Image (tube, rainbow, N blue to C red; front, side, top):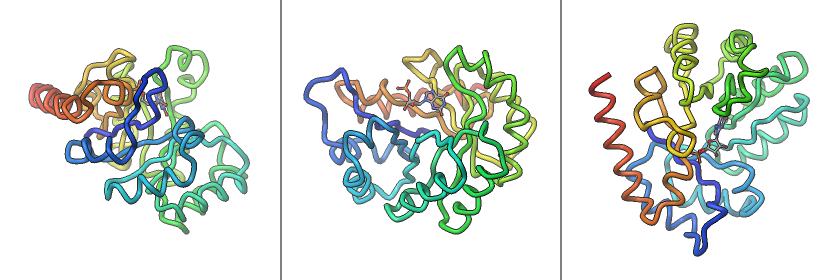
Amino acid sequence: MLVVALDPPVREKGRRKTSLLVEELDKYVSGYKIGLPFLIKHGRRGIRELRKSTEKPIIVDLKLADIGDVMAEVLRHLARLGVDAVIAHAFTGYTGALEDLSKASMATGVGLIIVVSMSHRGSEEYIDRHVDEFLELAARIRAKGVVAPATRPRVIRHVREVLGDTVEIYSPGIGIQGAEPGSALCAGANYEIVGRLITRSGNPGETARAIREMQLERWLKC
Ligand code: XMP
């Protein structure tokens, strides 16, 4: 239900080492998401350390959007580092892009999570006009999951209506971006992705525990 985005809390002094953070968080979370800030700061060694620190799924959020050969190569590198899934954009299309990525995904066992909408308001300017096409594409490549925003629960409900239980829905946008813990789960998401609310708190373990409790409370009422 709770996936923690581990991108470094850039505004904080005295950042915790990832392995210590994971030790505090591990019993409350379903998995971890790392993105470019984490990769630029910690590199491949950081991924290896994270892999050693937890048996929970690791999702690498590169929001891939390149030609198929390049994306497939990235996926193969990530597979060797033991990650479980990678996030890719859908707008690159099938032929010569997601087709190759999905073949690499099947060959390596690294799952694909496809962005069909984003949590910021600009998503409505372009991306959200194509949600149905992106969902069709996600179904075509048998994506493990899609990303849909907690900030717009109607999009989550729409994804669930269109794709049923064939994919997992991952929802960022909880906390600093405005949505309340549990709200995306009530709309149909499987996982809420939470970053800064946890990583910038003075006591990340306690914050993750409290968020889990809020998720459950809200879930029981929806
Ligand atoms: P917070 O606001 O909780 O952000 O610090 C958590 C993480 O979620 C990512 N993020 C998104 N990823 N689609 C995505 O694929 C989105 O709409 C979206 N909104 C936030 C962000 O990169 C951060 O790591």
